[in-house]
Image (cartoon, rainbow, N blue to C red):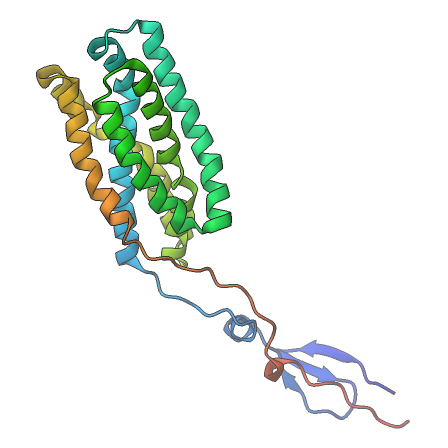
Length: 242
C-alpha cells in the first residue's frame, strides 16, 4: 500500500519507509523553476531616464505652442490652431495603441527606435512648415511617433531594475510629463524674446540627443519560468507490504 505524504518542519515525509526529502522553498524553488536572479542595471536605466527627459521636453513644448505657431507664423485663425492641437493630441492616442501592437509583433526596441527616428523629421516639419496642411500632417506624424515608445519605455525601465519595479515605474511615468513642464517657462521666455521659430530650432537641437541615445539602449528579456528541475522533484513515496 502506498504511504501518505505530508509536510513537516520543512521536509516532505512519506508514510512508508522512504527517507525524508527536503522541501524546496524560497531561493531553491526559484532555482528549480529556472528563474535566475538578475542584478539591477542602473547604467542602462539612467540612459533611459535621459531619453525620457529628452522626449518630454519637445512633447510638452509642442503641445503648448503648436496652436500659436499656426496662428502667428502661418496666419491661420484660432479655430485652425485648435484643430492642429486636437489633431496632435488624437495622434498621440493612436500612437500609444500602435506602439503596443508594434512592440508585440516586432519587439519593443523596434517601437522605441522607430518612434524616435520618425519623430525627429516630423518635428522639423512642424518647425519649418511652409503651409498649414504641412503643419497638420507633421503634427499628426509627430504625435503618433512620440507615443510609439511610451509603453515600451515603461516595461524596459522595469526590466532594467528587476528588483525595484516601483522605483523603475516612477521616473519612467512621472518624468514623461514633469520634465517638459519644468522646462516650459524657459521655452516660453525664448518665444517672447526670439519668436516661435527659435523655440522649434532649440527643440530640434535638444531632441537630437535622446534620439541618438535611444538607438543605444540595450534590451533586457524578461525571465520566463522553465519546467522544474528533475533533481528537485520530491522523492516518490515507497511501497510496503502489509
